[in-house]
Length: 203
Ligand SMILES: NC(=O)c1ccc[n+]([C@@H]2O[C@H](COP(=O)([O-])OP(=O)(O)OC[C@H]3O[C@@H](n4cnc5c(N)ncnc54)[C@H](OP(=O)(O)O)[C@@H]3O)[C@@H](O)[C@H]2O)c1
Image (cartoon, rainbow, N blue to C red; front, side, top):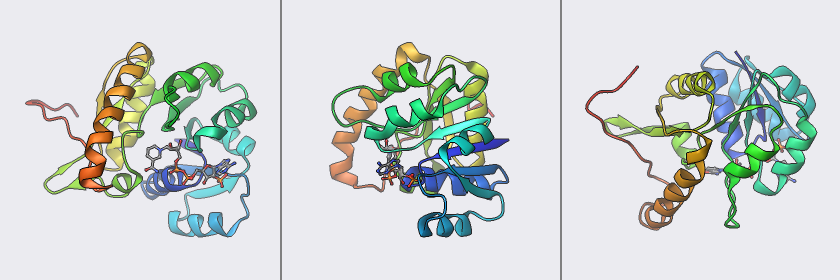
């Protein structure tokens, strides 16, 4: 499966590196694919990773991870164009009180959008184990098959995915987790994550 990673900072760099390490073909779509930053990232990600422009990466990926700073989301999705037949994973967050979920749903043309990874500090994606257990990834979106694909990508890097509903639920989940974050982060810094315990686990 081919994955385009748009934005090669903390989130995109970490997830792209981890997926490339698991054998997925990854292309980082960057403003400057020849920068030292990208050269170092490719070295760390190994032979399954490459870099290109935004357009090259979008053309390459069956799955597109959107991992740019919030103020660039609109420009990037406009430049990405038609995303028909692609899964778009949205891990972006906004800090202006507006919903990153709704923004991406509105702007991602024809993509099957799955909301994921936004509830983690990027450090937890590098190492999702916390003592004896691993962190839960909350997935939402309207396309069951796309969510199942993203769930597999989560398991491959050691996360525990659960489905938290469709687009009608996204904003509620975003707000609830955002509220929890505000309470937890001052206590635990960036060294925490969430885990949903259940009696029977799938997969
Ligand atoms: N950091 C976290 O722990 C965390 C957790 C949850 C969600 N998020 C969300 O995930 C998204 C990415 O966060 P991040 O921490 O990975 O950000 P970051 O380290 O600052 O990286 C963002 C990337 O966006 C790209 N970009 C495109 N246009 C840009 C511009 N004009 N200025 C700066 N960068 C630009 C850059 O990639 P290129 O240089 O390759 O173009 C840059 O590396 C954000 O929406 C954030 O809210 C972050």
